[in-house]
Amino acid sequence: MKYLLLKHYRGGPKPAHDYAPMDQWTPEEVDAHVQYMRDFAVRLQETGELVDERALSPEGAFIRSDGEGRPPVTDGPFVETKDLIAGWMVIDVESWDRAVELAGELSAAPGPGGRPIQEWLEVRPLLTMSLTDPE
Amino acid sequence: MNVSLLRDLVPAVIGVLVRRGADFASAEDAVQEALIKALSTWPDDPPRDAKAWLVAVAWRKHLDEVRAEASRRGRELAVDALAPDGPALATDDTLRLYFLCAHPTLPPAAAVALTLRAVGGLTTRQIAAAYLVPEATMAQRISRAKKRLAGQPLDQPGDLGTVLRVLYLVFNEGYSGDVDLAAEAIRLARQLTTLTDEPEVAGLLALMLLQHARRASRTDPGGRLVPLAAQDRSRWDTTLIAEGVTILQTALARDRLGEYQAQAAIAALHADACSAEETDWVQIVEWYDELLTLTGSPVVRLNRAVALGEADGAQAGLAALAAVDPSVPRFTAVSAHLHERAGDLARAADLYAEASHAAPSLPERDHLTRQAARVRHHLRPRTPP
Image 1 (cartoon, each protein chain N blue to C red):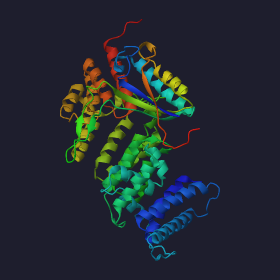
Image 2 (image 1 turned 60 degrees about the vertical axis):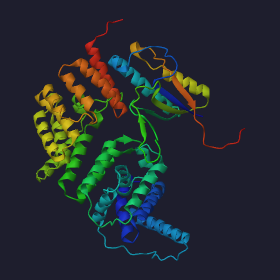
Image 3 (image 1 turned 45 degrees about the horizontal axis):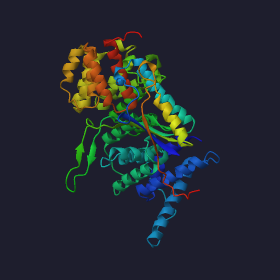
Image 4 (image 1 turned 90 degrees about the vertical axis):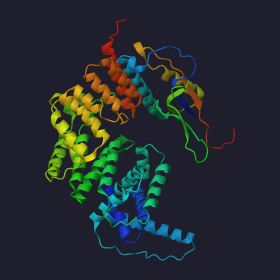
C-alpha cells in the first residue's frame, strides 16, 4: 500500500511546540535535523519502503484559467495562504499502522536543543490504478 | 563485456545505417534496439566483431520495421535487404550526429536526451533514470525530437555552439541513477576534440576536467555542500587538473579566445592555488572582464562581483553587485556573502535566510540555512542552558 506523507511549512492542526524558523537555530541543530531526515530516507530505502521524496521550494503561485483567449490568472506568492506544503515522501508499506509508525518517526526529527520538533505530517493513502476484484 | 566500447560504436553504426539508406529516426531506433539486445546477450555470448554484430542486428531490426510499416500501409516492399555500405567517412558521421542531435531547433532538454542516446549510446531507461522522469516520458521526448528533425540532412555542418551548450548541460546535471552524467559529458567532449580542432571544444573539455577534479571535495561525508574556499584541496584530483591545464594552454595558444576557454582559465587559477588565501583574485577578475566582453551575461557579472570582493575588498564587491540585475539566480546568496565579508552580519543573516528560500537545490538550501544559522549564532551567542 502506498501512502503520501506531506510535510507543511505551515497549516495543519495546532503545533505541539512553537519553535523558531530554522535559520535561527544553531548550525549544529540545523545539521542534526538535516542528517536525521537523510538517515530516515536511507533507512527506508534499505527496507524497500521508500518510493520517492522531494522537497518543495516555498516559492510558486496559484494559477487558474481565465477563459479562452485570456492569459491565466496568477495568485501568489503564497503570502496569504494558511497552508503551504514543504515536501512529500511516498512510501510503500505493509499497512496503515506501518505508515503511522514511520510518520511518527519522521515527525520526531530533532529541532532546537536537540528536542524532537513533533511536527504534524499529513498521511494520505494513494488510490491504486488497478481494477482488482474485492477479496 | 566492455560496455564503454559498445557505446563508442553506437554513432558509427547509426552512420552505417544512414549510408545504407535508412532515415536518421529509424536508424537511431534500430541501433537503440540492437544496443539493448547487446547489453542482454553479450555477457553470455560475446560476438567476435562487435561492430559487425551491431550493424547486422540493427539493419535487420530496421528492415523488420520497414516491412511492418509497408504492410500497415498495404504496399509492396521495395527495400534492398542487402544494400551496400556507402562511402565510409566514419569520423564525419559522428561529428554530424553531434550537430544533428544538438540542432538549434530542438529544445535543450530534447537535444540533451537525443545526444545521450544517439551519440552517447545510453538506453532510454538510463537517460530517464538520470533525469528522474518516467521512461515513457523520455521515450516520447526523444521521438518528438526526431520528428522535429525529419528532413534535416545529416551531411551538413551544424552549430558547434549549441553542441557545446548541450554537453555542458549534461555535465552540470551531475550524478543520479546509475549513469554518471558528468563523466559521460567528459567522454563526449573528449571524443569531440578528436573530430574537430576548434579551440572552444578544447576549452570546454578543459573546463569540465578542472571542475570534475574538485568533485570529491565539493561535499563532506555527511553530504553537506562545501564551498570552494573551505574545500580540502588535498582531495582535488591532480591528474585531471594537470590534463585540464595542458589542454587549456594548447587551446589558448591558438589565440582564438571564447567563453569556455575563459571559464576554464578561471577554474585553472583556482586549481593552481594551494590554499584559498593564495588564490590570484586579481587575475581572476581580469578573466571575468574578458568573459563579460565575450558574453555580456548577467551571471558572469554576478560572479565577477564575488571575485572583485576578494581582489579589492567587500565594498568593491558590493559596488559591483549594485550593477547586477537582482533577478539573476543566486543574487541574494552572493549579496549575503559580500555583506558578511563587509562585516554587516545582521543583514547577511537575513539575506542568507532569504536566499535559502529561493535555492534551486536541497543541498544548496540546507547550506544557506546553515550559513544563516552560523552568522546569527555569531551575532547572538546563546547562553548555555
